[in-house]
Amino acid sequence: MPRVARAHAQESEPAKPRHELTGQAEDYLKAIYELERGDEPAGTNALAERLGIAAASVSGMLQRLARLGLVKTERYHGSRLTEPGRAVALQLIRRHRIIESYLVSRLGFEWDDVHEEAERLEHAASPELIDRMAKVLGNPTSDPHGAPIPTAEGKVDERRFASIAALEPGSGARVVRMSDRDPKLLRYLAGRGIRPGARIRVEAKEPFDGPIVLTVGRERQTMAPGAAANVWVEPDGKSAGATSTSRARGETPTPRSRR
Image (cartoon, rainbow, N blue to C red; front, side, top):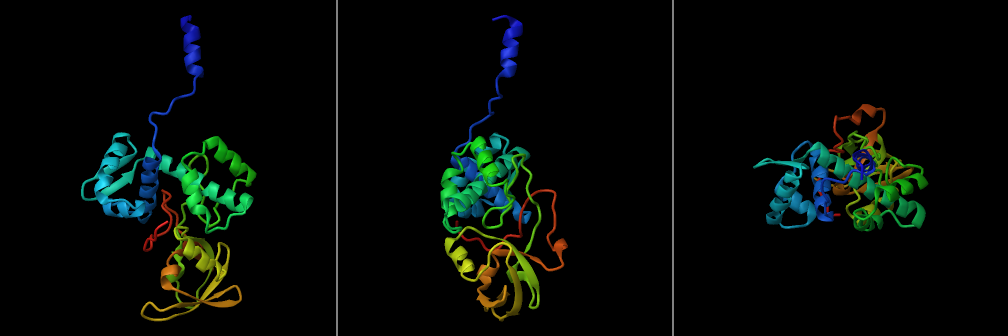
């Protein structure tokens, strides 16, 4: 082949990825991203708990991800994503949340049934499929649980919100999002009318970790503090209460529950 033609053919070929990641490696990146939301590095034990694996097995994968330039690990301090690692994590999160949205909106799944399905599908879905699903849905900005959906370019809502557990009696707020980790929690919240967009008001908080009394819409409800800590809200008249950061890290973490 003539040199000019050969050069033209090479220029027209799509760039090949520098590395292929397994689903397990992608899960690590997503877990580190989620743990970093509290502005602290992801510790080995916290990462193992998040992924449901033994802490002893975490180091090897972190070393591999570090060699790929996706993670920076500092001994005794934990791990953080690099910019390339963060980009991979955000794309995985985008796939997960669009799949959840599609399952609920188009296939009739309940909001407490979609997480595990999305976990299985997110590693196999191509960017083209996800973009088409997003287009069919009208390019949603949040999933059925209120979590922000990153754009195809990797931009995501960076605001943080207080939990219901942090509100004082007399405070009103709009529900923004909730943890989707536990289907039982989602059914518990649905039974009390607590979904994204719902209006709530804290009427009373019993001492010693007692129940929180809420008005949800026009109904009086009680709520366990542990559940309230996993529902994030925008207080009335305090859009500044949702603060922005230079990196998308989400809400201040609350005690974790397994997905």
